Length: 99
Image 1 (cartoon, one colour):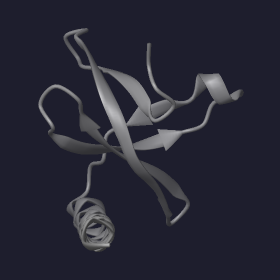
Image 2: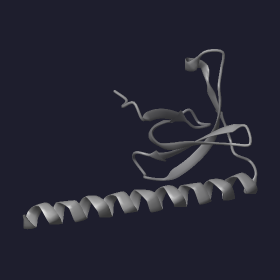
Image 3: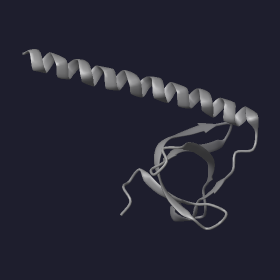
């Protein structure tokens, strides 16, 4: 069973893989989804194109270097923010252990 932040990606050969959605990002009228493959921890992204209903959306490949560069910057900011959250949690745990 998939968690709320997971999706199944099917490649060109029909193989399915479970991915965890890291975040979504909207820029220039496009909706990007950045995700990590659960099995390999490889990170990728796609453009989400909404369908007639919420369940009918589809994904398109990102084709330009400019889009990949933009998403690389957004992903780096995500990792930096996530790293800060982990460090804060570790500091709180150390403070609790000393008390």
